[in-house]
Image (cartoon, rainbow, N blue to C red; front, side, top):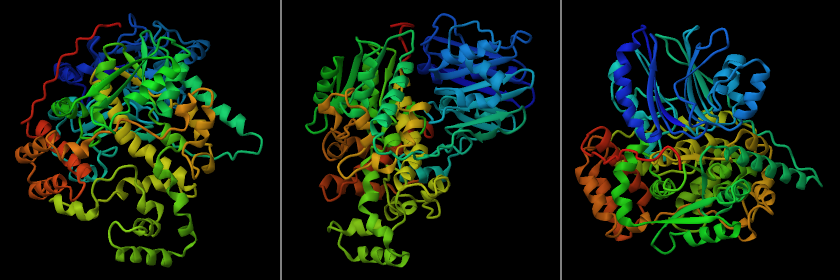
Length: 640
């Protein structure tokens, strides 16, 4: 695990960039406080900061490897963990590969040498890496299927740079001949979705290598990107009498994934909200570490803390449990620091409690497991039940559906039936574009000065929906969320907030073998009238305590709606609006009106306000340079 940064010169003059790359690595110090270094040849510069997890003493980076006849042919810089590295190592050794460390980095390079780009499909893990082939003078860059680990790219007249964090690339833009101009379309997408969708970033000249993709690049050329992960959701219907066998397949895949995710030379803990997903992971982890420590967080406000539920779940599985309660003052004070770690704004207030529970966990462990991905793979979101309620509309002609939409416009806001008619009149592609939407078009037009109606969510969703034609509606929603909400919000906050505290987070649900069994589950084994994730719940009988098994989804709820009305955050919000130099982007008078309406209780603008406020903090840090967060130097020991 590390923070990586690299530069491929267009003209063989990489040596001039060594000092700049080394300096820019300071932006990534939290990702790898255990070790720091650079390597270069005439074409490339590799920099890394290492958080040592496996083979602590020997697996240094950048790593050199090659076949016996060319022992230093390749150079690798790698962020992540490969959980099946022992199996890969054994297979490659049988093919003649020679290894000099016990870590999970060498099998990546050896696999690439033996199998070429197809090697990425053999990796079970989270990864973003670059391999430089000194013979072919070609860079190979790849990212894991789900986008657990980030990788930013920038290509200009003078070369290509890549890194784990955008802030490090911002320091290299002059070297590449690029600017720090913002991308107005990405700003509009963020304002609607609450996150910046891949491959965009808010800076026009910096993009992201998308999840499930690899790229090859030669000096002086642009990266050639290829997608290798294309989910198919090939449903395998349950046959009468085989239900238990299918549930056992799910349980076995998850148990195997957790076992591999426990591979580490340091202590592994687990986040625990008290819901089914995190409890399942913790319960399975207990089989490998009976002294497992679990961690949760909450708030002092009644109704916004599940710490008691999580503690009950920890007690049921026999885990030692640690709780972190976040105060409103801590919440507000941490926002600039958190936004700095994010690189681009994500308007999900759950980032804040996640940051604090990660900070608490890092006092005790170096690695934690978590339950992200279960909802997307097994059908856990409440919105996935929508096709059941809208099924009658599918039998209507397009004309009748449009008529239902016109009828809904005559029904007053808040009246029963209005929302149903509105949603029923729309196709799935029109009505569903992930789990987040802050503003509708009318609201967006009121606050965003350069509102462009042609820049819609369909810029993001249309290509994804094109891949899923003919699938059942829940599978299409899951597929969309894999490429929007999951990798744009869920995994960004998971990676950024844990790595901010030099803590490695592992997500066993997001494993290729778990996905293989999950994508075969039919509609009626995901969603029923009474529950979600039906097949998963059946598979976890005997693993998850009964009192948890059918409990509703919990997560880390945040009392943002109340705090923006009260003394906790109202004055802070006023200050952000007044001081922000974003008048050319937002109508600040309209935003101030939203805040006043929210405080008066006439409307709940909390999500929209939070979306704008987080952007203002981001703009104050990265554009105006007015806000300078206090970023502490990592002081963690090499081993815990």
